[in-house]
Length: 401
Ligand code: RB5
Image (cartoon, rainbow, N blue to C red):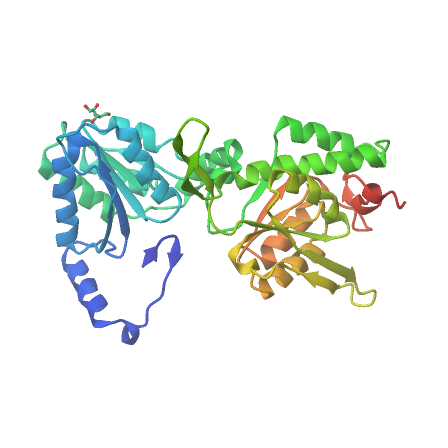
């Protein structure tokens, strides 16, 4: 049964009786994945329709319905507030599908589709709803309570929930949309698989060109590496969760926001990774800093740990491993393994220049890890240097050549 992008295989004898009963119910009830988590919301204009659909879904056996409101039709509310709540739940995979209802359904679809990862289909009929699943893999359905009868809305919803995506050529088309989303907002896009994000921001590109230049001085190189690392982390941290707090200004008490919980750990791989630390700490001064030292065994050519000191609460932090050059990927992959072995869960790799060979190695060994780079270069030469690259980042940072 396809579920949330994964294929789960069940052995019959392991299925609890309640689940088995629901599966039988499902077979006789026209199909549908009743373990799907559905987020639903409406504005005031569609409040009665929302209630109808929620009770219909409950009767059908859908167990997890997240109703984000509105809770009354006697007070007008603004559809974008609701659309963005449902959109966020779907984009963040906290819900498998979303249903949004307003007077026409149009406002909901416009607003929800602003959210990268949301593919909202505005439907007036069963066929469009089915096709939006088969061809477009829509994950949000929007409908208009002032346009459709409650019966038609139920039929559309049932058809939409029970139709599978056909994949194949449609996946190719959808990945063009996903690529564009990734390009306009790399850190907005969630995925179970690690992504490779190349920062094409003009400031980053400009600074990378200067550090590539063999005539750039050690002082300037060092400063620019810090600046590039800071700019990259500014973007990487865009989705850090916030909590509401209260702050007393000289004039009044007000709501404000602060970063939630344990935040970042940065872990430079010695020695070149050190060159990125201060640029990041300028933005996130409370980040904890770990260190990893690796050398390459001359016989086996495998990376060997000679130093590893990480924050004690590493398992609770978002971890950014820093290594300016992702060449063969051997030491980056080993550094990630070390951090994971010591409890690290959410690990990303931040480098300045990556080679395709390194990206493949890291994603082969660690498919869950995001790789952030300022440039993806052409290839490695026979000595394992990135071409065109910038030479040995450690030597250029510390003037040791
Ligand atoms: C509310 O009157 C109405 O504008 C809203 O429900 C919706 O139709 C917007 O698209």
